[in-house]
Length: 222
Image (cartoon, rainbow, N blue to C red):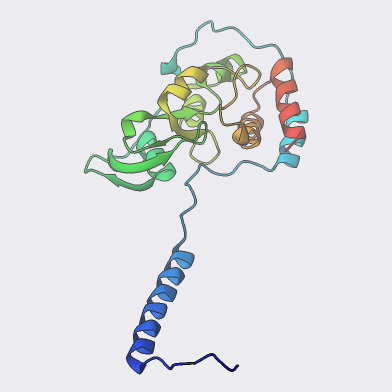
């Protein structure tokens, strides 16, 4: 390698480089090990194959009427121990870094709404959606339930029936079924449909023809 002069760097330079390199390695290690936390979510629904099976087991029937319906017939936001009610439990479960005051109200945190992908840092911007809406459940068979059964449905933390979402998106959904409304975030369609079928199957609620066709079409691609 004639013509090329190699000069050794002073030992102090190597020491500094090693220290910097070690620091970067430690930082990278921290980033890799810590990583971004997965978004919190409701209990997982059944998988797509099971959802397709469950859908086939649901009774297909035209929706009933709203006669006699009232949200008060589905007592919700029941106490979940101490000062906490169902709403506050879901806000804590579905959020990140959620801080609650002495009354269990969420005063700080971060929520990513799976319906539209929006991020919120004020609990007032969040609704707790009944995935299968109360009025929809009423028209699908819950009108024959006891008040205790309707209360259990409206406060169900075991299945994917309650979820923290952007308030205005939830309000746009109203009491619509999947044939009438799906989450704006198309990538959530499979999960939403699996959740819907999981809940309806557990509670033996009916589906109308258009609702079943829409769910079948979505689940076919999942």
